[in-house]
Image 1 (cartoon, rainbow, N blue to C red):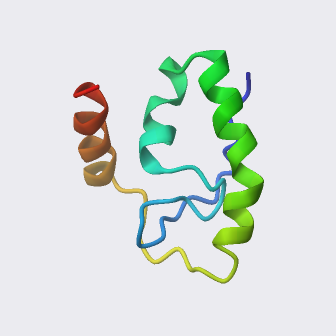
Image 2 (tube, rainbow, N blue to C red; image 1 turned 30 degrees about the vertical axis):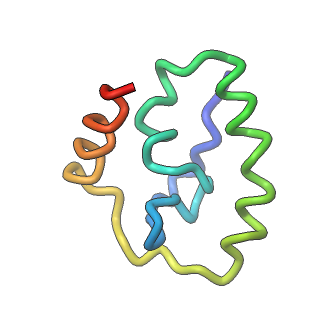
Image 3 (tube, rainbow, N blue to C red; image 1 turned 135 degrees about the vertical axis):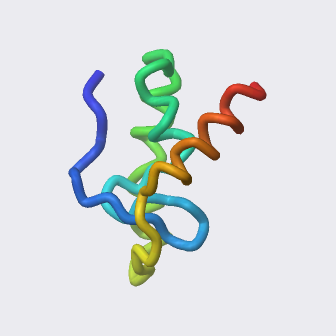
Length: 76
């Protein structure tokens, strides 16, 4: 299943990408996620888009943020 990435990465204050509307943890774990999990993520994107309408991407998707997310994911 293809990624919802639109190559316009920028995180809001809650670490959701304002390009694809995935949380950073979902972005980092995408390649290891099951097809069922990927479907769940895809199904949540439209409502998130509406929820975040008007939010700005005030943070970048930095290496530091990526590594923090990897640490959280490994705990599961």
